[in-house]
Image (cartoon, rainbow, N blue to C red):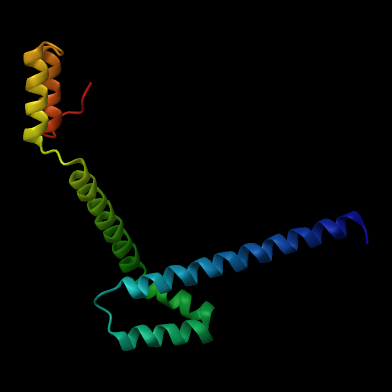
Amino acid sequence: MSFWDSLWNIITVFFWAFVFIAALYALIAIITDLFRDKHLNGWWKALWLVFLVFVPLLTSLVYIIARGEGMSERGAKSVAEGQQAAEEYIRSVAGSSPADEIAKAQALLDSGAISVEEFTALKQHALGSVQPV
C-alpha cells in the first residue's frame, strides 16, 4: 500500500465520519423541533418519528423543506424564553429593584462617595436607559 493510498483512505474515513455526524445532528435537531412544537398533534409527531427511523435521509429532507422556517422560529422563541427566564432569575436572586438601586446611589451621593454625574449615570442605568460608565 502506497502513501497516496493510505492518505486517500484517511480522507475517506474523515469524509464519512463528517457525513455521519452531520446526519446525526440533523436527526437530533429535527427530533428536538418535533417535541418543541406545541401545535403539532401527538400522532403527527409519532408518524414523523417512525419515518425518521425507517427512512431517515428522505424524511429529514422533507421535514426541513416542509417545516424548516418553523424550525428557526421555534428555535429563536425557545432561546428568547430561556434568556428571559435567566434574566428573571438573576433579578430575583439579586433582589434589587430600580428604586433600591437609586436609593443606594442617593445614599452614596449624600455621603460624598460619588459625584452628581456618577449618581446621574447610576440612576439612568437603574432605569435602564444608559449603561454605567
